[in-house]
Amino acid sequence: MSTDSIGATPGLGLMLTGASAREEVELARRAEAAGFEVALEWEFFHRHAYVRLAAVAEATSRIRIGTGIANAFTRSPLLHVTAALDLDELSGGRMVLGLGSATRRMNEEWWGVPFSAPAERMEELCHLLRAAFAASQGGGFAFPGKHWKLHIPAFARPNAARGQIPLWVAAVNRGMVAAAGRAADGLLGHPLATRRWHREVTLPTLASAAESAGRASSACRLIPIVVTSIDVDPARARREAKQQLAFYLSTELYHTILDLHGARQVGLACQAAMRRGDLAAAGEAVPDGLLDEMAIAGTPDEARAALLRWREIAPLVVCYAPNAGIPPERVRANHELILATFASHS
Image (tube, rainbow, N blue to C red):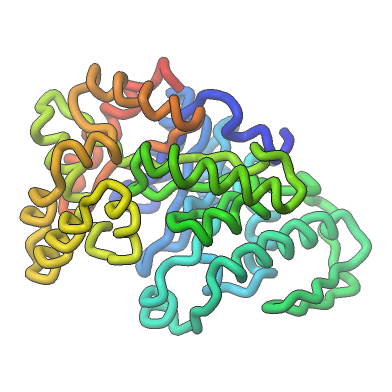
């Protein structure tokens, strides 16, 4: 499997948003059985993507596995390299390494690490990782970069499954999108990114940045992460999707997407409600039109129609069952419906 083949053909991914690590392992098994293309683990202050993904690797045999996303700057680059190589070996060459910068507040207040020049550092990190993966075949490793200077003459990984592992970068704003275009194999689109944002900002920026780096315009593929909420009661499905979007909209960094739609006031309303601790009110501030641009929400038939609209943007779409303020049993029910609704469409 070449590094640029993932995401080139129609498929579905699933973000593993279970209530526990064990539940997510079982969810990945079931996604594989339903024909999904990729299962992604994510990180937050209370969960470790690489640890969970190791269990997923052992429990599955066909589905691609990946981090969607691992925090790029809270580990030394070599820790990303060795974790990805271990996971690629355990999975028989099914690993995708997805990285994201996270926000300044997350880096500084949650993990206690400095935060600067995120797009520039992410681009350099991609080059470093590629060089390290290539060096795993033998010959030692050295990287004289601006942000990282590594020298390991004895570096090798004799049992590496592949000489390269696909790199996906999570990006929202233009600077990080351009960095991904110049250096990554895929861009993981944020759940707040609308189809219009991807058409008018993400895809053109990716193509021009790739060409500026001497790559093919399609070298970095868009893989959108799409909040997906399905229920026989469409009102409930839409309400829960809006809550998840509102949770993200409390972060002003993402409001550039709203600016494209002339909807900055939506983000401000979500922020104000979240400061009061009122997630329900924050969700109510998200208008229906914006919801339909950002998410897949409604009955199974409505969800299948919405997926087709997303497929016009990118062949591979990652479904993300909302969990902000939603009881675990409802998250489980949503996963059941996502798998059942899209089993024949993946």
